[in-house]
Image (cartoon, rainbow, N blue to C red; front, side, top):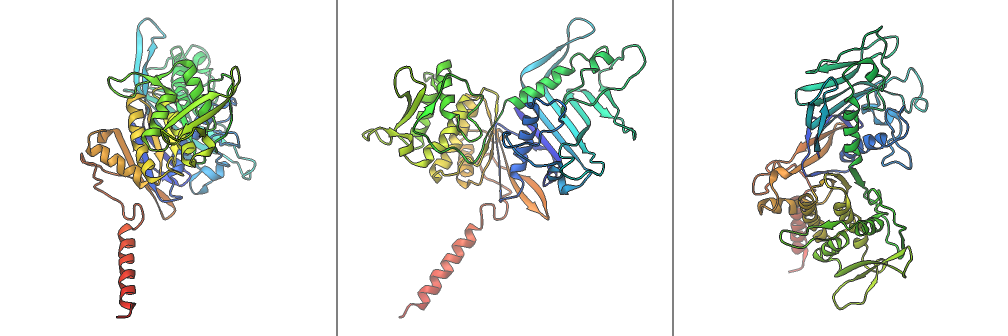
Length: 460
């Protein structure tokens, strides 16, 4: 689970400062304030880690990637060229990373929490924007765990970059022979393979890089614009990694989960049920529909249809024939219960096209998911109803205050700022930002004033 993140000189963020993440983390704020950029930084690292091009330091994206951020010029704060960005992540390991002693027997390290930081510099050498679209250099990257640190660093040579490894709390021992240069790190996070030949006791470096890859692989994203429902869904037995960026794989994911026999606990002392059954329960509890089933159109066919009933006595109809909100919340529910335990789910504006009561109900879905599936949910939202329900559940002790991290993001003089919302034990926000969700009291006062003026204008 992601524990903390810090960005420097990335898009509209000069410096986020350390941002604490909890099982439920939500970012609220005005449009174009920088909320989305926080999520994009994680997706940028994820798509780079999943890229097959080991020489590309950062994969800024295209039409097939999670996010398309344009060029270097677009992502560096204030478009300063040359410039530098810093990404800093800390996360907890699902299982402790145990590293054996390369020089003997026994364990060298047992790592429960890992921190990664990288400084990325641009070096355009006078080229125009189109030419240096991928010209990033990893100037410094390091992994920290406990009292130890291993760092790959550019020594600042004016002729060309020369990298060296630095150990802190752990002595790196060079092999005998004439010193030679290490090549640049792989992508933005990987140590070069030659490091194992250069040093006697660095065989574990690949495991640190792999730990970061595994964390990023467990980050799943669902965007704000989700697929329209279909009358027919095709599934040939594949197992999707997630539900797709637009939720287009929600039905295949449910079918794959049922085929695997994945079971979900709906609560203490209650029998475990399938993912599809749990999704159907939530659709009913949220008041959207009465029943929900996915079945093949005929025996031995790969075409499936989704059938729903709006009430116990109504006729069964296709998903396309009920309210649009059902198809919009379906991928959210599917992802919460289909994703692997320990995953981090990024949900961008999950409340879109949903009734206020259902927006509030999303908070209950998230609380249930983090408790029964042990996933982490990171939300970007404009929903006051979602926030109010979270506050209520804290007051009711359905979730602890420390299990949430809520933030307000604003833009001031062209710079994004993030402020932690302080909640007490009763769910009250003690530092409520001005005009957080608009000027509600101002609107009411204006309405009352208008009513009084109209009453005065009425003939006696």
